[in-house]
Image 1 (cartoon, rainbow, N blue to C red):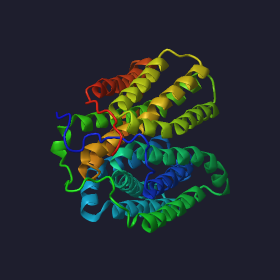
Image 2: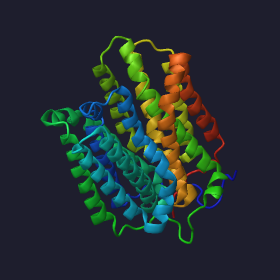
Image 3: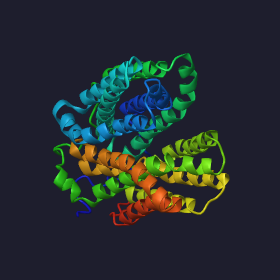
Image 4: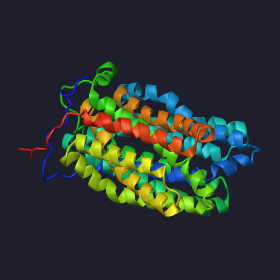
Length: 402
């Protein structure tokens, strides 16, 4: 694997310039998407039950969304190269809006399956194209901060969405789906209005889209993908699927789960901007080592806790590591692809989706057939591998820009 070459970590300015406005627009658009998801996800199981769906059918409905994301990911890079990332981004938002509106007016469980499948396709079209656009408009020495701003929008939307879901659902169960569709239409309009003439500041002149075989020989890219896989596994397999089971087993109700997740999300939101600055100032390697190391230590320590207070503390520690991992891997990918999209961005996104789809199933099987500590250990092991891999990255020290 190569450790240096075109697209390596650029010199970083001591006084960092402001980011292009497109970065903040993408953050707002991402926040709208996550706000809407937060509105509909808590309601979806209850809504499906009104069509006679049982627990297994509800599980299929939830899993189908992620499965369609995973199945569509390999095509997103080529679509972005052929038609342009902004067009594919808007198409994804419009497809998600159509999916959500149709879901709100569904007449059967079968229709729900079809409409949620469309949503999964639209979701991955948006997420891959949005990241590719972000890497194109962000300056080479600001990719860490740009990734942090982008992630902050998702975090804010993810925190606010579930809080608003209940009051909207009281009006009628389809209302959150309709509101989500309206949010997505607004996000698409904002994207068309502001990003239509965006500048490719971060794309290096004369550089073509990097082919996948070349990317897979670059250590930086492989390490970023490992981190994405580990994050998807831990966030969806451990944190979202296993932690609620542990809290309930301690005889706390689900409200306590919500508080634990909210507190850790607030911690991550507070740290994400400083983390982005650190990625650009200190370099990708130190940020990757710190992020994977802190996250791995927190998940390992969860094996030994038996009180709610310590669980919340460790989730907050994990949030600190996750703040760095919200910016550093994407910045690494941006360095490797030289600010251009293509299959590289799509595969990176796909790694997180694989962790999100496979993680909950494998973690559940390990918890059921071996033990809960062993299930936590699976996530700690993946983060540990990413931690060790991060040490192999080449150190590039920041230097002032002339």
